[in-house]
Structures are given as structure tokens and as C-alpha cells.
Image 1 (cartoon, rainbow, N blue to C red):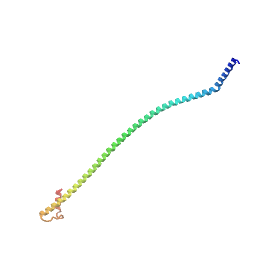
Image 2 (cartoon, rainbow, N blue to C red):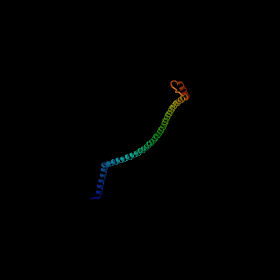
Image 3 (cartoon, rainbow, N blue to C red):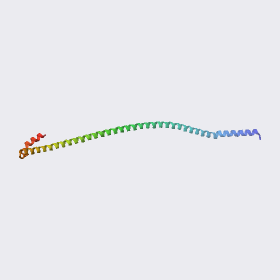
Length: 157
């Protein structure tokens, strides 16, 4: 065996192997590598989009939270104002009701006083008639002496 022939045959086998690999195997490997590169690039782009969307969502949630807090404080302010209005209205109603009760009580007292005065007048008139009848030593008839009784009653008013 000749070394040159071995060397040449090995070189030819090597070139055939390179040609076969370049023709049939290498395109599949390159395609797989390119697909993998594309997947990695898509994953990185999706990661960047996710970061941006997360940041945007974070800003939106902060805005929504700020708006919710502002709305809540407005609602609380309105509730406090309404509570204050209700308390003032209740105070006013209670005052009005107290005034009505007081006016009713005053009217009732006035009526009672008028009734008591009228009763007292009648009693005084009766006592005056009794006193006059005792002074005159005779009975005074209310029907006969109506004018006298009316004048006495008018003087007592």
C-alpha cells in the first residue's frame, strides 16, 4: 500500500463527506439554527413588549387607583356634607317641633288661665250676689236682676 494512495483516497473520502454534509445535512442544521434564532428573537421581542405592557399597565393601575382615591374622598366629603345637612335639618325640625309644642303649651296655659279667670269671675259674681243679698236681707233672683248681674260681671272684666 502506498501512502500517497491512502492519503489521496482519504482526501477524496473527506471531500465526499464534506460535499454530502454540505449538500444534505448542512441545510437542515442551518434551518434548525435559524428557526432557533428566530424563536429566541421572538421571545426577546415578546419579553420587551411584556415589559412595556407591564409598565403601561402599572401606570394605568396607578392612575385608576389615584382616580378611585379621589372619587372616594369626594364621596366621603359628600357623605360628611349630607350628614351635616341631616343633623342641621334634624336640629331645625326639633326646634320647630319644640316651638310648636311650646306654642301649644302656651295656648293651653292661656286657655286654662281664661277658664280659671272666667270661673273666678263667676265665683266672685256669685259671692258678690250672696254678699249683696245678705246686706239687703233679701234674696236676689238672677232672672229679675239680670241687668245688675251683667254690670257686676262687666266691672270684673
